[in-house]
Length: 353
Image 1: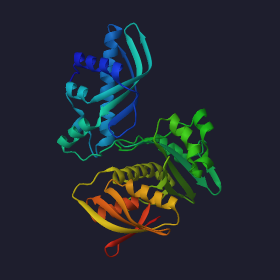
Image 2: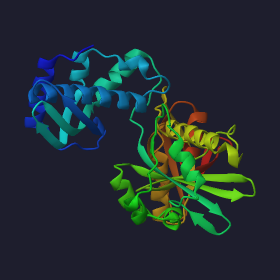
Image 3: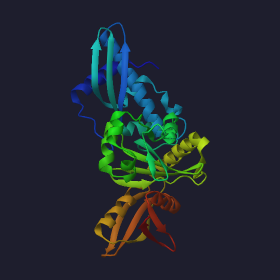
């Protein structure tokens, strides 16, 4: 449906006057870097067409990142409805000439309004947009490591993969001079966030996926590690995804990896439903820092509502965990967060993997 131009104009004027810089917080969903280039009878009409296009593109991207399955179920929104979902716009690199408008636009949507539409649609969805992650496919043959080199067939396979409808947006760099200057294969495998952060910033991403493939005769053995400013977590692949692939099936290996990454993210991000239940847990710790790390991992699981310490000693924490969903769901999500759980009897014992 065509967007109502007068309504969009009102929203745009309000945004230009009142909107603060776009921020990443729990109240908004932001799609950044929407490039538009429109021509019309005059510059004003070209600009309005560009804004309409930016909203449609941003809504499509947001739907793709939120919906588990076919996003077509929510894409076809009335123009006026789509307009009311917008909380703010931010403009970069604006260029205007006779009958032409170019810009890079960031669109901030209202989280509550978006989630209401998703709820009414009945589609399975995430409660927060999937992250943007830069993929670094490192190929190892014996002691030799390659990343940007032409001989890295693993990088080529990732670059050829389109990705399709994925909750996690994966960016595979082209390996230009700036990429090469920012990180090499050894730096990627070091998992040092200080080395990786400049590449993440360049590609406007949230983290890095190290896709380390070790060449073993005629097969590749892959290990996926998700790294952000909070640390590194191995991506646990589904059991039906093979761990060894012949060289001629690299494309299928990449697609299996993408599926595993999406499943990993969905397991961590999908909010379970049901009543709040409590369980007691023992958490052996060697230091305060270890306890803080375990607590942060616990709280990263959407199923867990609260961690309440009851008894604290220098070697062990007894805590009460409040969670939503089934016990099996809680255990699954804790293991996805890098925690080993012994669930014998009624008391959980939780340690880092």
